[in-house]
Image (cartoon, rainbow, N blue to C red; front, top):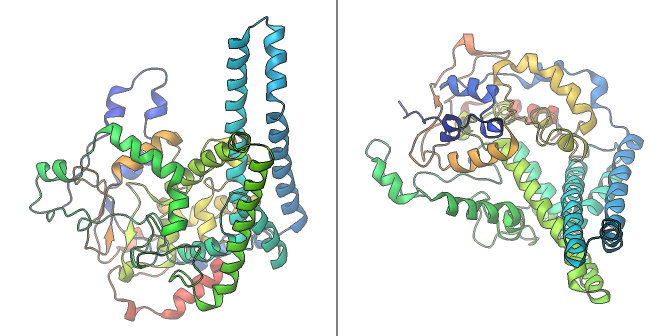
Length: 462
């Protein structure tokens, strides 16, 4: 029996008017109460059958409208930024404020620009992500042109990331196959076996001060995605040192991908050249304010919502012989990240991520209806969490410390070696099934019908 994690100290201490900001949502609390986890036996065919056929259709004109509106908003924010000095001068003059008042107004307006432009930059990345799944248009060339432009603008190599992201979808939360946010194991952290480890062992080897945890979190949030692209930071350890999204010969790719990886590299090189010329023609401070500050904050948002999609104390990881495509898709959490901002500017990338994992090429604007259609089929295995986003991020970052080095189905443990849930396999009970045949969670790969996974990938659009 795994040790049960204690409640978060925030919940015990917070009772003021803002306590809801640091409180677990009811959906999360309900999952915590289901401490014994039986893997789902849901059939992707049953899930597919629940979705109305018209939701699979792509409307190129509608997609172009969303992309055009998004780019137009970004341009409007830029036009606002280049007039900030003039606006600040007028506001300060109207209020009879001096130089310090004008400076304060200017800083406030720049902060406003940085926030909203970073939101739009992250939204460009999400639209490029949709293009990578051929989800915006039935014409591949439209997806390629839009995806290349959108991703290159935020310095993401389109073709390279598309390859590894599709691999993520083909092996979500499969410890042998998944591509990123790969968890540390007990062996990685050199911890003693669970049956002999003492509280002091955990304290000495992995416990951190909140300040150091915050420092690591800031580095991960702002630089983590680019470090993953450059040298596979937090990527799957099966790849050798030096693995990079910028190397055409990298083990991340197949030989057939070589030319497209080179094209991505050239595009990124052109973008860097554009930024260099822009800096030379004006000055680097100008480019820093207008581009790099919102770009850094956009990376913070991107890491935030992608990390929270699969990293949660209540969500399982599977080893090869217990994994199925549907189980990987269900190891996903839908979250209303930043409410209407996430829905409007980020196109629901966090709101409907479970549906996206089941059907990657359905346009984002149809996914809310897909989510509604499949929830009855998924039953209790549908994971939703309305915990305030920043608290959920801190909770996952501090509670999702490591997993066990062995076991077919494992959950994150915290810095005290405690897990919220445990696997009670190897065979599910019929009462826990929500559609689909009975499935033995610990059967070997060789016993599994290979056509089943191939069919699942085809249905999912992979």
